[in-house]
Image (cartoon, rainbow, N blue to C red):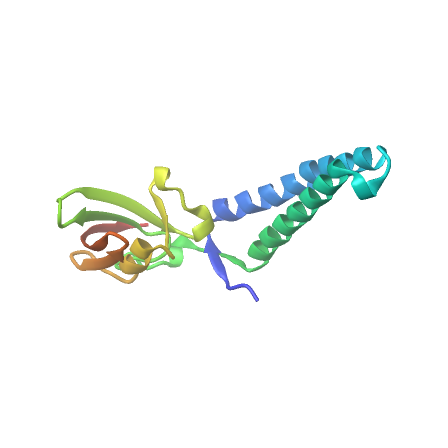
Length: 157
C-alpha cells in the first residue's frame, strides 16, 4: 500500500503527462522492437528479443509505479494553508548561522524536488527539520556533514 503524497496541480499534471507519454509513445516503440526481433527467427538465442522483452517489463513497471503515485496523490489547496509556520508548499528564506549565507527554498513533494529551482523535498533532512517552524525560530538540522543551524527569516506561500 502506497502512502498518500501531496502535490501541486502542476506536479500532478506532470505525472499524468509522463504516464500518458509512456503509454502512447514508448509502449508502441517497444512492441515494434519485440515484433522485429521475433521476425528474426529462433527466440531461444535472440538477444534482441530478450532485450526488448526486458525493456517492456521495465516500462510496464515504471507505468505502474507512476499510476500508483497518481492514485494516491492529493492536490494541495494553497488557500487552506497556514503561512505562520513552515508546511509543504511554503517558501522559506533561511540564514545559515555558521556562515551567515541566506537561502530560499520551497518545500515540495519528493517527486517535484528540483534543487536548481530551489525546490526541496519535505522528506529531505532539511525539509523535515524546517516543518512546523515559525519565523525567528532556529532549526537544527542533522546532515551527513554535521548539524547545521538555520534561522527562519521569512515564510510565504
